[in-house]
Amino acid sequence: MRVPHSIIFVLLAAVALLSNRAVAQTTLDLSVTISGSGAHPISPDIYGMVGFSLDPTFAKEIALPNFRWGGDGTTRYNWRVDSSNSGKDWYYIGGSGVATPTPSGQVDTMIDTFLPAGSKALITIPVIPYINSSSQWNCSYRESVYGAQESYDPYLTVNPDDDKCGNGVNLSGDQISDTNIYYNHINNSTAIQKAWVQYLVKKHGTGENAPIHYFQLDNEPGGWGNTHVDVMPNGATYRTIVELSEQYATAIKQADPGAEVFGPSDFTLGGWIGTPSLQNNLYAGQYYLQQFSGYDKLHNSRSLDFFDEHYYGNGGSDPAEIQTTRALWDPTYNSGTWVEQYVFDGPMQLIPRFQSWIAKYYPETKLSFSEYSLTNGGTTIYDALTEADALGIFGREGVGLANLWTIPAPTDPVAYSYRLFRNYDGKGSQYGDQWADSVSSDQNQLSIYGALRTSDSTLTLVIINKTGNSITGNLTLNGIDPASNLAPAYLYSSANLKAIVPQKAIVLTLKSSTVTSFTSQFAAYSATVVAIPQKR
Image (cartoon, rainbow, N blue to C red; front, top):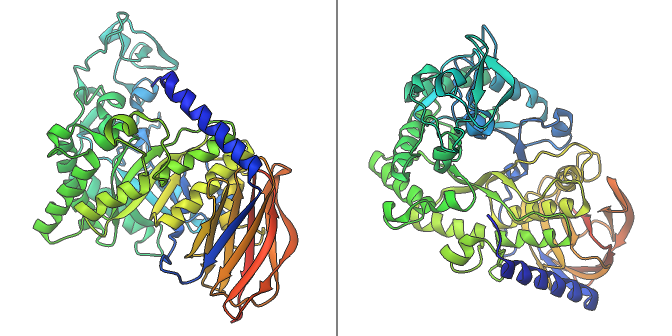
């Protein structure tokens, strides 16, 4: 979507204002309170990623809590022939070219790949009405059947007669209708998917410590009429999406009563909204929760465990990118999207907004973002700090699970965002699992995320300087009894994008039996971890 020039000018002015503030204000106050009113567990599953292309050694290094097998290419997956159809993403190509496929082979391989990391799998279960029929290469728009098209797969032809696979758009620019869906598809059914869940449970086990625990109800169903236009030319109303989701969620729970189910897993902005006039005058996400709540009350069950949506932030490759995380929570920040201007009539406040939907329409449902990305590339310090800020926000705001879509290489800056929380000292030390109330006098310049690591009573702090200037932080710690007056510290900054560097220990000052403080300089565009062991 093209952003209006007026919005661009407003955003640039906001960035300039923030920059000026960074120069003017160089000393900020921070406070952390253990066991304060906002204390709550932090779900380890917020540090998840999509499994495709993720380095397994890196996954083990950060003890990756979960990975996702999902995306457009999984919507039409047929586990029995271990292949799917790529839809509009790539010439509607189906199959794998394997003559004798191994049922569920690619999924089993991914699960086994991340077993050493102790990762749980979030598996996409197709609920779309059609799934791929064969492992043999196939496609929906063969030139011999549908005539000349705008473009063709440059790598693949299919038999007979080396037929070309087109993009489904004729030379006049019109979408071609697929007149024989069953040429390369079969009907999907709850019986097929229930059998797959039963297979996965039998092969990999179930329960809290088994890799099979999470199941997602398809992928971005609000976009079926685009990505999967060959089989769903008219898309699907949210009433249909809900009905299909309820049926398949029930089948999943029958096959694995301990499973947790995610939905609707729809796409940024439009997928959350749908068509309110067809949804009891509700947004799609609200309607989905409302209908599942009624369904579960009727059946005396809990078939939806996570309200799950996808989110792509504005991104960018400059300092302004770091501020875009504010769209996740800040009631004063407008990121300039059409949904804020024309639908929400104000700032996005995405996490509180979704949590309010849950509270109103289906309480006790957990919130997740099974696909998200906030950066463009992950190769700069700005990308690293943006991602680190997002991870801190997820913990503070009580998100249940999150999977990063844009996977970093182990040496990319964004990989170090994860190490700040999952292995900051290179020896496996992790950020805490119990949120400690953390406040900054200006969170937009110097953000702070504190958490108690309950395994050894260590208070861990992640402090992010989002500005181009060094900032002095005066930090007060409440309710802590340090084991020493020295606290180890670790720095990630543009001075060394390939390492989190140990720093000189921070000196703590005991003000009273329950109040401790310290003052420290935080380098421009940096993230600092401070670990404060307590007496045990």
